[in-house]
Length: 352
Image 1: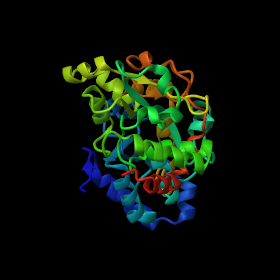
Image 2 (image 1 turned 135 degrees about the vertical axis):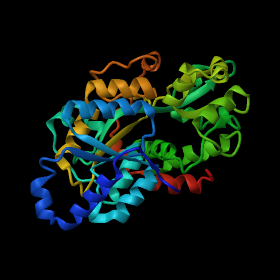
Image 3 (image 1 turned 180 degrees about the vertical axis):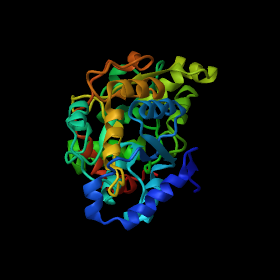
C-alpha cells in the first residue's frame, strides 16, 4: 500500500539516510546528532490535531520535524528495508503490541531519560527504555441500555458466559487491540482459562467479525447484538462529535468498564521510542520528552479522546466524563509480548 507522505522536506530524509550510511557506528554513538536542528519522525498517528504539537515543538526547541506517516506495519517494513541507513529517529504508533513488534524486529534502541521515567508510569513503558506510553485507551464494552444491566458486564469473564450467547459484536482476531486484550488475559489467567474465554466469545458472537470498533457500537444500537467490545475513545468520539446519527446511537448505548481479576479495566497505550539507527538521537529523546509533557498529553487526550498516561494530568473534556474507572495496573510490556500466543489461541478458537 502506498504510504501517505506528510508535507515535509523529504530531501532532508534522503540526506540523513546517505550520511548515516557513511558514518561508522562509533561515530554515530559519539555524535548522536549533536548540533543537528532536525528530527525525523515516522508516525502511525494520522490526526490533524497533532500538527499544532509539531509546530510548538519546533518553536520551543528550534528543531524541525521531518514527518512520514503510514500504517504501523508499513512503517515497520520501511525501517527494516532501510536497515542501518534508516533516517528514522522516532517511531510512534498506537497499541503496546505494535510497539513490541517493532522492538522484536530490532527497530528501537533503549534510552535513559530522567524526564521520561518521571513522566511515564513504569507499567506504561518498556522496562529497558525501548518505548514509552504517552496516552491510554481502555478496551472495554458498549452495551444496550435497555437489554443489559451494568452488573452483567462488570467483569471480562461474564462476557464469555451463556448469558450473552449470540449477543456480542467484536472485530476480527487480527486486530492488534484484540490481540493485546487476549494477551492481557493470558498474562492474568494463564493459557487454559484465556483459551476457554476466547472460545466463549466465539460462541457468543452475534455475527462473524466485521468492521471496526464504531461499527460494533452501531450494531448494538441497531439491535444486531447487545454488547460490543471496543476501545473507549471510539465511543467517546461518537458521543462528543458532530454526527447526529452517532449521537442517536449513543442515546441507546452505554459504556461499561469490565474488571480483570477485580483490578480494573484493561488499558493500552499510544507511544513511541527512539529508532535503532537514529541519526539525531539527542533530538529524538527531546521529542519523546515533549510527548510525555503534561501539556502534550492533555492536548492529545482532548483531541483524540484518550486518557493521559501521567496521573498528574487531569482528563480533559470530553474524556473526563468517562474517566471515573479503575485501570488495571498490568505492565503493557507484559501483555504485548503475549501477542503471538494470543493470535494462535484465537485462531484455534475459531475467532476469524
